[in-house]
Image 1 (cartoon, rainbow, N blue to C red):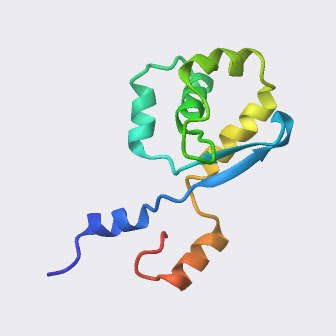
Image 2 (spheres, rainbow, N blue to C red):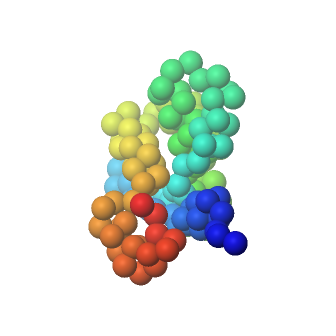
Length: 120
C-alpha cells in the first residue's frame, strides 16, 4: 500500500519555532510556530475590520515566550495598538509571516538531511 498524501503533509508540518529578538522592547524574545489555515480561519471568525486588525489578532494569538506560553493576551491589543511603535510591531508581524515558510537555505538543508519528509 502506498503512502497517503496527508501523511506526507503531516510529517512536513514540523513543530519547530523561530525566534525574533526585539531590541526596541528591551531585547524581548518572541517565538512563532508556523501559521496554519486554522490560525487564519480562527482570526477570520472574529471578523476583523481590516488587515491591520487581522494581523494584530494573529500576533497576539501566535507570539510565545521561550517556555511556549503566550506572550500576549487579547487585553494587550489596546496597548500594542496605542503605545507600541507601529514599525516595530510591523517588523514582528512580518517575521511571524516569514516564519511560516522555510528559507531556501533551510529547505535545501532539510532535503539533504531527510529527502522524504523535507518541506518543499
